[in-house]
Length: 91
Image (cartoon, rainbow, N blue to C red):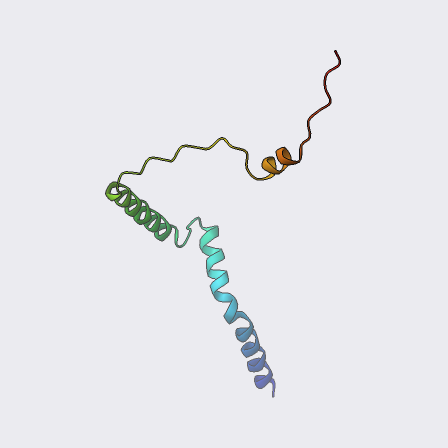
């Protein structure tokens, strides 16, 4: 009977700790100063940067920008439309 209860407790402990093993492994590697996946992130960022450089080199020359209009728009247009003429200056 004693042996069965010990086996049941060990089984319960293993069942409890089994999902926590990946977290404990990651915590151990971080405490030792190694960052898992760091090299993969660096390689991925280098690939993205290289792709962007080649895409910029192949890109067509940009079209000239249209001239900017200096007419009032949006809220300023409404405000100017609702504005009234101020009273005349005293003579």
